Length: 276
Image (cartoon, rainbow, N blue to C red; front, side, top):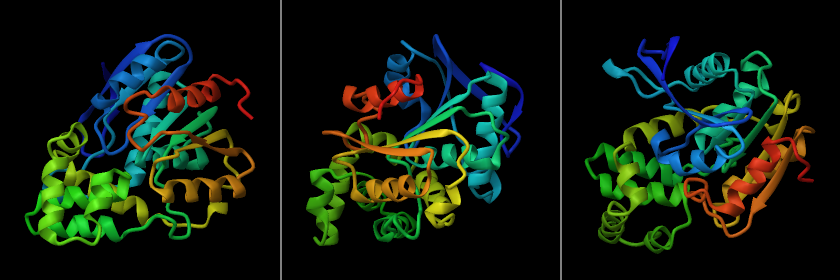
């Protein structure tokens, strides 16, 4: 469904996919496109009316990705769908929390994030991300994919490549490119790197979110890179309305697979039930 009267920063229309029934929930995707969250939307649709849309992208003519544009777009989607619940993944989690913290009118009742990119006092390591950007700029997308894998995930392949020769890292990237994650991510590498770097420029102390006006759940995966958990704990300690939990046995991609141990606490929280 095209949202009438809603346009992206570049003027293009916004298409929203809606399914399920119950309270309105907007899903803000991470590095993978909104279409890759179909399995999650189907499962959440048992309790919620789930709205999916593509976040802002790097525009034509060299236009840069801006987190503020993404926040504004989320606000427009919330307004036009009437939804008051938000679930964000990865950088989508940062967009969701920024929206909730005051960049929008208070139209969010509860916000849940999974492995959110939270640049709090330098908590997100940038080395692998910068290595990925350099590799992509020099025409080595498979090497960029291997570095990005280390930044976002804790796959055995990514760990194997650390400290190895460039040849080994390229081989790892080539193997990753044949996986579901790799195929989808490789197609969006410039976008993923541009938006993640833009998000990290918003580095701040955790207490800037202290007045978060809605209840927030910061869920991280037990098998996700540690920096997600570190940032979530820092924020929960500084923000009275926020709580952090760890999804046992889950990694960064578990939300995409709609893994029960990942989805259940999110759905429970968003439904208003007591988790803690």
